[in-house]
Length: 121
Image (cartoon, rainbow, N blue to C red; front, side, top):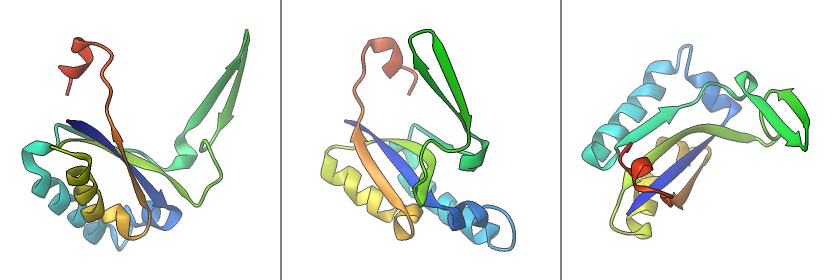
């Protein structure tokens, strides 16, 4: 069964990606992804929330807003797709995720709408 781990990080976590704490930040992620090994077919780190652009559409009207989607203390910082036997296994790996210490990790089962999407991961 495949799950998405949605990684939510604080502004401090985004700041740690660069600067004096960057090596420690990235080494914890390297250790985590290395431990997942072949159970992680896909993962991506997102740039800071202020680099995002939000599009909303109502009928023919398009509204574009710079910055993050929401004004919450934690923002989406990345997504990891994992292959696990159960939601409990996925939660166990979410608990080990570096972001779980200061942020949040949401676990969601992946629903494939056709076979071609599943072959991408």
